[in-house]
Image 1 (tube, protein in one colour):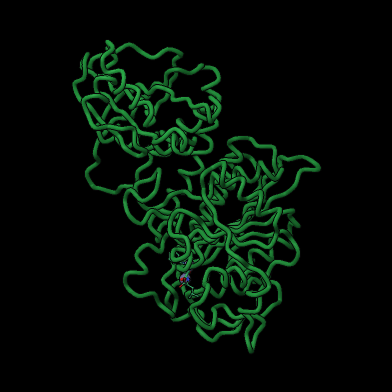
Image 2 (spheres, rainbow, N blue to C red):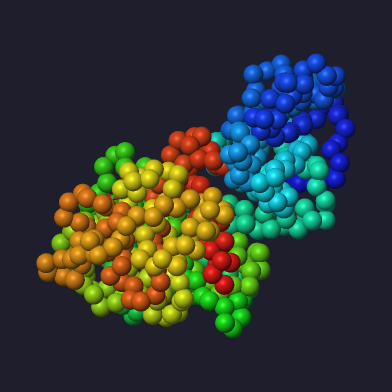
Length: 491
Ligand code: BES
Ligand code: ZN
Ligand code: ZN
């Protein structure tokens, strides 16, 4: 997609697509002024159709006066306006334009008293860029041309800066989506590590990759156990971006990178395995955020850690009943090989805390199916015992619309993962509070750093078309924008 800018709204031109956003009140006003002469083609269109500016509604009108195609996009009631709505409506517009196979479109900037002009421009641009991504592997390409958009009503010099920023952020989201959507046979732990190296090299910061030999020497036995049944060996990738200067705080972000989760010997049943290439979405979000942070040249200190392994069924696979010694020295009773994410994360979190002594430590993981039961696909459960860190994460979530919702993890829960024979068990004694217990397990492996866990099992993936705001299906790229913002808030 190519995006250019103009201060004035362009004159009507036959064959062009023109886009305008409407609040409900905007459409009411047009209807009320029925008697006055109003030659604006959009006014005619809005009058003639039952388009009331409802949020998520997009009206297309072919052959308006002057031979233009008009696209009217609803934002809902004025009191409900947020830049997030504008971003989502803009993504919906982008998808519709692609469907129309329009080569060119003129989009008018929408402003609202509730938000600054910069924020509106950014939201609109991000919507276009995020909505432009589709995952499709049809043998016959649909052949739609690259879209050229002119955004009108903006100062070009300022808008170009905002476009550069939007491209940096959305580039990170796109990367995360592509990594997750790719077949698990291609996006192996090794390949994930290679992607990490590529991003680091491109932006000129160091990356370290640990293979099985190194993981063994380090004592990451949980991580190794999870990866042992697979032909594709495990990897731990660590990226260090230190541009914050002295005094700046360090945020370490750790991602679950299970490139395919078959469940292991506790194999998943049909109906529960088909989407399990999504199980590295945490690691993908971490890499996407590193990419965005570096492209934006943020003056922050971040460490990105991707704990990658394939959880396979095989003759060498780790077994239910195994008792393992973790990197931290704590022992773990494996009761279910399908609770593997917490195992790789336990080693990665302990390693990261010990090696980098970060000021804040966050992990993102598609950890439990119970997260989908708790908050569905719109909010990611947030678990932390640190009030200050929770506030900052919630602020980043509010500002990006990568939504989070806190779940409790107080003293009542902390004993629930204790094992009779080992220090901890990797699965609860019954099905209660599965998401909290996943976090409680991880809690045993972080000593005293402010730490938070985000369970992105529901938000990383669009399970049905239209369910998610700016992606049609599969990988959403959830977490990239949240982490990028969090790095700024913390520094
Ligand atoms: N990767 C899954 C969690 C998951 C489920 C992610 C659905 C996305 C959608 C995870 O490794 C898993 O299998 N967790 C188990 C844990 C249980 C065995 C304690 C679960 O949620 O059932
Ligand atoms: Zn699993
Ligand atoms: Zn998993």
